[in-house]
Amino acid sequence: MRVIIVGGVAGGMSAATRMRRLDEHAEIIVFEQGDHVSFANCGLPYYVGGVISERESLLLQTPESLRARFDLDVRTGWSVGSIDRDAQTVSVRDVRSGAVQIERYDWLILATGAAARDEFVRTVDGPVVSTLRTIDDVDRLTDALAAVPTRPAPWSPAADSSDSKPSRTSCVGGSRSRLCSAALTL
Ligand SMILES: Cc1cc2nc3c(=O)[nH]c(=O)nc-3n(C[C@H](O)[C@H](O)[C@H](O)COP(=O)(O)OP(=O)(O)OC[C@H]3O[C@@H](n4cnc5c(N)ncnc54)[C@H](O)[C@@H]3O)c2cc1C
Image (cartoon, rainbow, N blue to C red):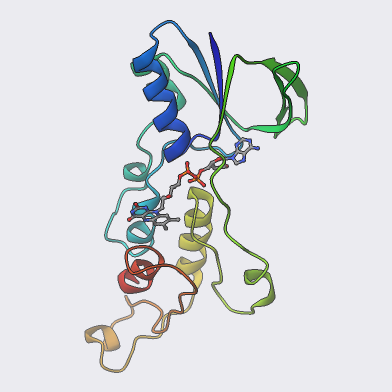
């Protein structure tokens, strides 16, 4: 049996490991268009805010570790573009080279999740304006924050210190446990 899973974060990797437990002989291929799989979204705000200090702590698994532990074929940098349900195939594009290939499946699992709405971000001027959903977002945000001139709040113990953070952060969207934790940790 050949299983193709589209998307390699929480949904996709949960499906892949569950599928492995159900069938130890299945060929399980995960296509993830980004560079990272199975990363800890929940930890992203805490890394931006410095509560989690090691970037590697966000990366729970790699294609290599998933191959070793679950015998999964995890391919990052590959985007699934179309599905031919009659032929039971998907077309898959190498994000870097643009090369396209056709892959056959017996089972197809779509775990494509969601994407941040960034049309708002593109319209806002500011030193650091970013979405916060992926490892790429975090890298962009931490780089940008490092370059921002710091201006501590007057009441901050860091007011006399040059080692301070931006004094004002705005957070758009998110629940108490998610994006707003970015604002709190900043
Ligand atoms: C900052 C933040 C904090 C969070 N904190 C919490 C928390 O504390 N507790 C909690 O329960 N949840 C939390 N969440 C939510 C949780 O992370 C999501 O519910 C979870 O990531 C959803 O996983 P998913 O696999 O369904 O989708 P996603 O995480 O969106 O992953 C989908 C993947 O599919 C890939 N993909 C999409 N289309 C294609 C394609 N055509 N070809 C190949 N790949 C494709 C995408 O690149 C993406 O990597 C948080 C989310 C964020 C952003």
